[in-house]
Image (tube, rainbow, N blue to C red):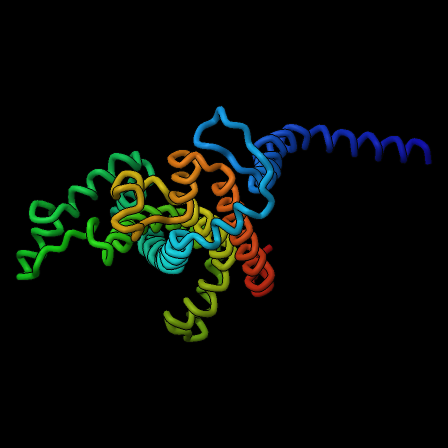
Length: 299
């Protein structure tokens, strides 16, 4: 009995020792920053780092929720997420279905489609900015050739956010494609052969076999793409005037960055960060409690 207890204790200690490096990194780079941010959300800072923080209670929360810019930013962020996430999943899945087939040039097609994820963000964002340039950009030239009036997409409050969405999807859809290719390749061909023998149509096969069996991949992509959409700031910094024009492209992460490092108000920036983390946790919880129960995991 003693030997059994000592062996179990030894295995437990070994397990915790193996987990220790991950726990240290998780605590230092995730748990501690979240706790520190939560504490900082109740503090008020001055105009520079030399002025010490002071406790102000819920004053930062009140100021954030009363700020009209915050409501605009949240609307932009929700609109951005609700459009790019579903479209990215659909486009990524269709691209994966296209290039996962054994046909000539499929490998080259995969490389070309995935290239935006390899190229530097600043580089291709600058190229897209030039493409959207009125009068001389390629997009304007195409519109002129179709007898359409060129639009200054990035400087028009009605079109700026949609232009950012298009560039984001151009990159994000190819990222999702890679995961869907892996999911499609893991589906046993026996299911398809049995369905064809039963006379199932292509749509029946897609609806009853392919889509249910790639649901684990879809659930995973929903989680990470939601985080990516809320953290999106690089395209805004390069392609727009830091969220302009008139805050039409100002998303939550960009607003947090400006509040913390342009206005040096780390208290309100911490409140915004807590709001972002809370919203993402609620959405992730809903996803895993609803979709995960309907997801089929093949052994």
